[in-house]
Length: 309
Image 1 (cartoon, one colour):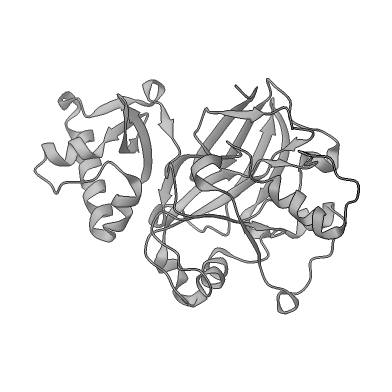
Image 2 (cartoon, one colour):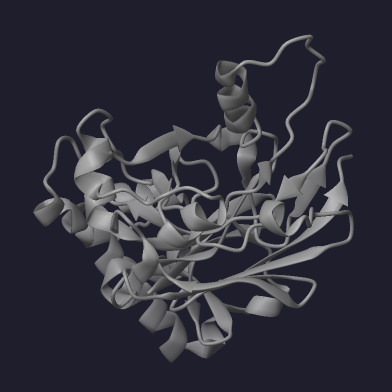
């Protein structure tokens, strides 16, 4: 099932993609006599397997009863990020050997390192499919990073890699937009410590985490460690890889983070990007560029770059 959050009037609703339409699962469940479903993705995920089963039944009802007005053509729907404001938006740095190699770094054995995890402010960085990637007056080198996003479905604390998949509701696409030359205020001296925070702060600008178009549930994603992943800018392919290139797999990532952070339903973890970033090519995003991210069994996330309003 491919779950979405879509705009209906002035409010968000949860739906499911059915063919080339979106089924309003809240209305469909009500019309079919099913359980009351929330219009919020996090609240739906908090219902657990019961909620997902009810959502799937509602989507089937909408499909079988097209005259009930429960289906809306996708082209007429404004999609929001599947989880518009996750409690936590975590991300991994350097989780593809190919990306480390292009930056002139060595991919060490797992026993010699641990995942490199950081956060992006969820309430301001999350951006919707079709939303504009903002270029601010402080922008110097805005770059792209297509990433597979893990969406947590159950509260997870200190889980094992063997059990971690049971806590994953599904997967989405995250474009970890990054400012590579972060300069907001001049300084007379730059130390290595400053460089780290420049890198980190360059992940934080508003709108720098486009996400979507949907949440593909774990039972329909196939093997999350064998998905084609691609990004293009204005039709030119920049990144073309497979999630099998990750150093730490999805289960290992969830297990590791859960040792020191309680993961909650709706939390999103971006799992790192493969080779092909603009920094290495000397290509930065500019106003008018169209960035298209694709991951197998999830879909397409497309955003245009625009001047900040």
